[in-house]
Each structure stands twice: as C-alpha cells, then as structure tokens.
Length: 150
Image (tube, rainbow, N blue to C red; front, side, top):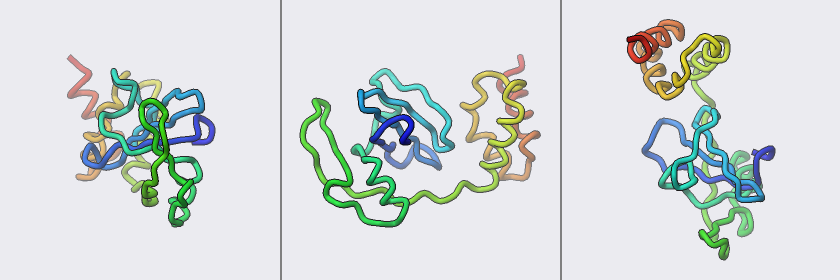
C-alpha cells in the first residue's frame, strides 16, 4: 500500500469471497485491486466499485492488522469535495488465503504467458472447480475450453 498511496477504501461485503479495494495516492490517483491483490480497472465513476467504505489511512490499516483499535486520527473519511474528517471503525484483519487460492495463483504466475488474455475474470469459477477436486491445471484447462475456444 505504501508504494501506491496513503489511503485505502474497501468494497462493502457481498460481491465476492474476498474484498476488493482501491489505494488512493496523495494526488487523488486511484488504483484498484481484487482480493488476490491483482490490478483491476476502475469503473466509469473512477472507483473500483459502486459501494465503498470510508477512506482508511495507512496507520489505521496497520493498527487493524495488528489487532489494535483505531485512534481518532487513525482513520480518515473525506467527502467528494475533500471536506472534514469523521471517525470510523477500523477493518478487521484478513485471514490468510487458503491453499486453493495459493495454488491457483502459483499456476497462473507460472503459465501466464500461455493463458488467454481475460482469464482472470473467471478466477471464481477456477476456484470452485479446484474446491471440488480438480487440480489447478485441470481447472484452468476447463475454463479455457469453455470460454476461449470456439
């Protein structure tokens, strides 16, 4: 997070298993990431999702990871015009990714040059296939056959 900006917003729960988030830099430039920390495109409104949390400072995120409560200045909420700050609750620490996600990403990293562009949009389907017993290779192959071969 420190490399890209000093604030972060999270998508409200309900979209997927892992939250997506956007980092906001000092110049108000935004970068979106999925729950596996892969880069996402911003939508037409310039955000990664329609429903986002308040902005959290880097210190508030560190405190949440360490299990500490946020201080009054630990989180920042800004209005669209850059107005005043409000106190918000710090996010709970995230659980470590399970082995399916680790294996899926390892396979993707190793074979990204041979996989079709756009396969990342089927990440949830690949995870589901792996959770029912397929290997990463089998799951990726099935998705390629279903969605990328005519």
